[in-house]
Image (cartoon, rainbow, N blue to C red; front, side, top):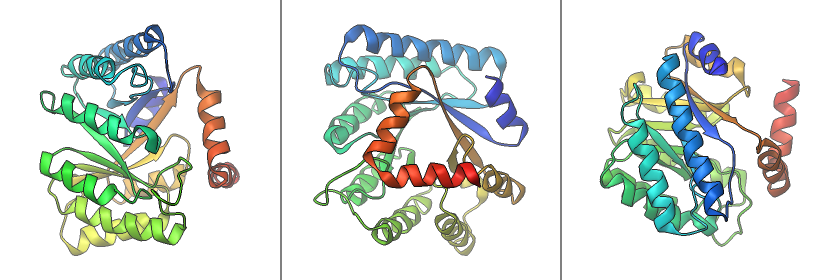
Length: 262
């Protein structure tokens, strides 16, 4: 909560992610669900500007889709009375993409305060974007952090970047409030230029970045009048979270090291 208050004081909103994924036991998934109940209550009592992000494998997706559905629905219902009632469903590896979207759509049918995450390096994403737009659902567009095979994901940065820009334009023109999640200045510049050329107001979308990463860029966007939300992951499971990201894609390690020294 203290970290959110500092972020808010700098003119940015936040989203909180309670770390933990790939849960196979029902009691662990229920502990994760209950942690979100506590988080949402703390956000209410402190009056901070934040919503929450959840990973469905932490909510029991690997136990069963029905179990994950019940847990996500409970979190969405608990969030409904918050000043910002939004719950973001994070995307994970391709092995659970279909299941994640199925659970999301089931909850979204009755709880419009949930949104999805789609990854620009996945070749299927243009179709998923069209589905989300048809649902009028909010999307966070990111590049993707998992190691994926060439059959399902673009491998070259140039291909991922080109797809990212194309998808960003589709999202911004949809009229739905989406999140453009990137630390890549080229992607940010392309987004700003497109928004200005299309006369899309700054209030129609937001940029999203990780806590502590490119703070200079976060502040620059705020000063220029663009909305920025900071993703704050926390909890005791930070070490496996970090090591998975570093082990799966060496580019993640390079990215973190560059930004530590920046």
